[in-house]
Amino acid sequence: MPAPDKDVLARRQEILRALQAIVPGEGVIHDEREMRAYETDGLTAYRQLPLIVVLPETVEQVSRVLKYCHDNNVKVVPRGAGTSLSGGALPLEDGVLLSMMKFNRVLDIDFENRAVTVQPGVTNL
Image (tube, rainbow, N blue to C red; front, side, top):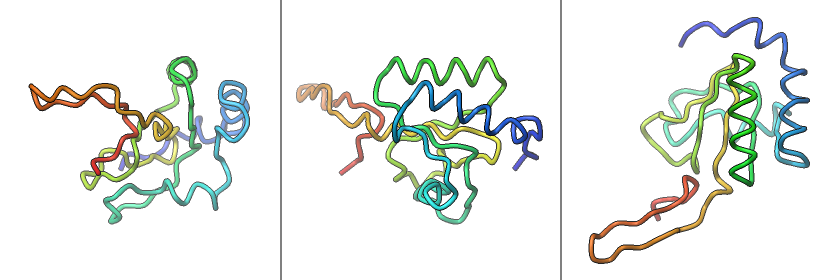
């Protein structure tokens, strides 16, 4: 893994406050014990605590989090339900883990074409 950005690590509290303003209440996880559930996805061979975990509930919150992170040079790792075995949602020490688990609705089922449109938090089951 690449070395973490020391500038981002030093700004953790500033980043935390900004993200809490965007996603209030329990929408931002920053306690080490609570973030343990997000240190890996289904591929458990690699473990890394993220800088911060954000659990948005609206598309607007997702947009604002991404804009803030882009404007402030903070990496973002999007994550659906965390069931993947491919390692596609592995967190970064200097990155925000953007959990999309609250986006868990089936939007459309097209039986004729055998296709389903779902939000990113829907699991395969």
